[in-house]
Amino acid sequence: MPTRRDMTGKICLVTGASSGIGRATALALAREGATLIGVGRDRVRCERSAEAIVRASGNYKVEFWQADLSSQEEVRGIARRFHAVHPRLDLLVNNAGGRFARRLTTAQGVEMTFALNHLGHFLLTLLLLERLRQTGRARVVNVTSAAHRACPGIDFYDLNLKREYDGRRAYAQSKLANLLFTYELARRLAGSGITANAAAPGNVLSRFSLNNGLGSWLSHIAGSLKSGRLVGPRRGARTVLYLAWAEEVAGKTGGYYADEREASSSPASYDQAAAGRLWRASLELTGLADQAQEGRLP
Ligand SMILES: NC(=O)c1ccc[n+]([C@@H]2O[C@H](COP(=O)([O-])OP(=O)(O)OC[C@H]3O[C@@H](n4cnc5c(N)ncnc54)[C@H](OP(=O)(O)O)[C@@H]3O)[C@@H](O)[C@H]2O)c1
View 1 (cartoon, rainbow, N blue to C red):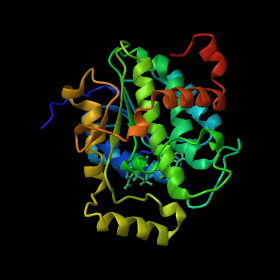
View 2: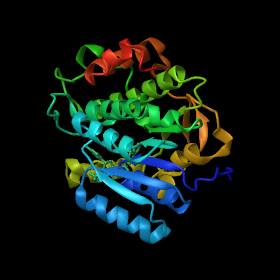
View 3: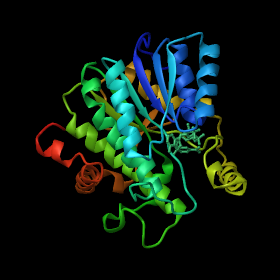
View 4: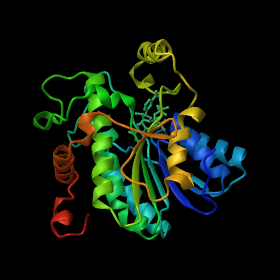
């Protein structure tokens, strides 16, 4: 059993906390006495999750903020709200995510999988960096997937996937982006006290892929069952929580974890040139390039 650091009063923000792995993570953190800010997209699911987590944990320092994290405007709104209310951030869990069978775009014209699974969290993390720095020992946990292995590399010539769209490929690319981002963030924050690691939760029974219809959800579940490993959200949250609170990983950064153990991710995920290129492209796409130029970002 990993040794847990005391989470009492630790300020934790979990995205995608209104369902599945994020909700299980949020509940476990609330049970340990954390001050919890959950973010979700659906207002009703946010309200119900907040009520259920308070009831089950007896912790009243739980609130849910509704936002569509594929919208950069709404991500900026969450960051502004956080800055206005909380002096520091001890733990950021970038968990919200999805797969989209059909190609969708955001109001800004960015392909939805890339916008939600990668860009929204890239932007949120950089906007909250100052609050993470206040802590001295803050942790960033990005939720990726073993599915990243299906992507041999980011297609920088078609980040918006205009040429040919395949939902599974788009998902795999976004989960590879999660890893490239995690490793690059860890390199850029080396020595800052802030650690960045990635967790693969395994195959989890959740609402994942239900947005594509019941048939798609059932085929996702059937595929997971066939692979022999389908776990509930609580089990799926274990590696995320390990990275969030285990003393064993204090100070460890730039790692990929599955089953509460450090593991190797795909060769493509260790491509530092690709990580640097993705970082620069993400700065441009989120309007942060000027701040970076002025040296205000790592
Ligand atoms: N399930 C698996 O087998 C599996 C395997 C590997 C990795 N993962 C990863 O685990 C993470 C969580 O997935 P899950 O299985 O727990 O799925 P889930 O039950 O569908 O939960 C997804 C969460 O993300 C939120 N979300 C989705 N779109 C959003 C948006 N535009 N803005 C804000 N929040 C949004 C959802 O909010 P609402 O409920 O309010 O819509 C929900 O809270 C994802 O990053 C996924 O890629 C899952």
